[in-house]
Image 1 (cartoon, helix red, strand yellow):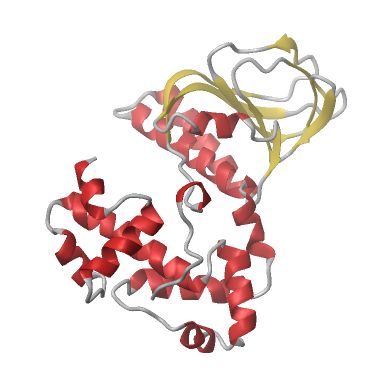
Image 2 (tube, helix red, strand yellow; image 1 turned 90 degrees about the vertical axis):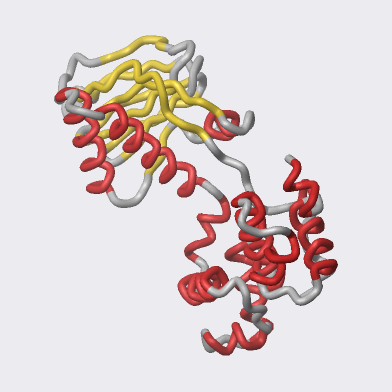
Length: 278
């Protein structure tokens, strides 16, 4: 199973992104209004997300101007000065929400700040339904409404993050579903170690083309991906308290606990025993 190209340290592909929504400031749905406008508005301590239901709005952010049309998401982190007005002949209707975020990693909000101010994402009707439910829950304030409001906005953030991630943008690559089929197989049978040639045959691709596609789509070689899956499952087994290092290694198909420990350290950056002490 050894692969000298396993990623370590800062080269590891796994990204940390963990935020939770809290402290809603407002949830507003506006009908078309030719007189709607804002001038040099900036919220000091909240993120603002708006979804265009219909119509057109014109935005200015610094030296950049852009139009917002049906299905667009407008995204402003705290402190971003922006001006906007409705189109005079086709004014927009929209839903907007302002909220704070709790950053559980110390770096997640920095990544969110860098998202584009206007995003065009697939599936307009899904977003429209989510925002309609958000407005309904916020307005009715039924039992546990805040739980649902947070869940809706976090789902939208999840979709935004995934849609703007470079790895996710690779999904237009040919045979992407074949590669996904292989990753699911690896994830569902982590105790096995699959030969690359066997994985390629399962999706009717030549081994060399399969290797190239797999790396292009996932960011990993097939061997690296198997190691990554095994080590992340090993982390869960160790932290559950139900397995020691040897037992975790055995459950994941390793006959040699010392090799398992070396692989764990190569992928995770620390040994299994040190990981348990964190």
